[in-house]
Image: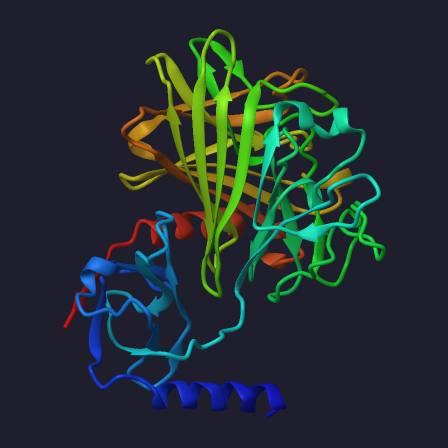
Length: 423
């Protein structure tokens, strides 16, 4: 055993010694005949009547093992709203988790991460940030240089990574991973601290594997207004944008969940004005991220489009219904750069608002994209999942059936009901 193990053991022992004696028992019950792995468990603060505001949770299994957990402030009021952790449950199984509180926070290994950096000028080094505002006249093609590390924020878990082009394009890209650890903070930065595209070459951790172009990538969004499609922002090379102001903010970077907010203020396609909000989240164990989208200013003739890039795809899109709750759209092909590796891409979309799928043109501001079409209204945000499965992450993903079975099982797990009883 190495010194890191002993330090962690000492810290956990010290934390347990400082725990309060008033323990809470949380009974988790899997209602599905399906094994759940890294199942997300969220318990609102209101359900923990005696939860203190200035302490940290310690969760233990019945065997006495510590469960990594975190407290998240979801509404930005400075107070935590939710206890979050991931847990494994057998089919129709039950487990009891012991919850106590301590003044000493346990530092768990990071199984999720968010990275965001910016330089303030062409000659300035990149420095880390937790958020930023992009105005319409600050598009990188107009500035003459790229201010953002990896073109915008990137996020990952132990399986896969993604990034968002916050430079006005608002596409979402894929980082294939070869390791379960988090990728280096230097991805997208030169040794001198400059913005550098150093992630399209293979590294020990992995690389960027997806050619996005003028699509919206994997899980990016647009609106269909009547029969016309309008892009939120710019395409590659444009110097102007139809979004007056865009903001990004890291809500939480935690060991078992990371969350980010994107806001697009006064997006003006055609003669309309919209306010758009995205909340992106990721937790361990899945080759996917979750996105929740809300739009204000709707007039009733709009549909949300969720994109799936197809620039290197020769195979047709496949549609699969998963029970009563989800529809999966997927492609499987050697659809990486230069068609070098097998890659499965998928969208897991809510069935109750699903209106079918389509394909964008091969040219223009929104092109080379399959898309799922979803009904949206101002009272009901839409939540979906975007999936990316690279053969160098798991060689099984070379096989289309293996990939399809993975996505189907993931959708079933995301739909699984786990009840919690607190005593």
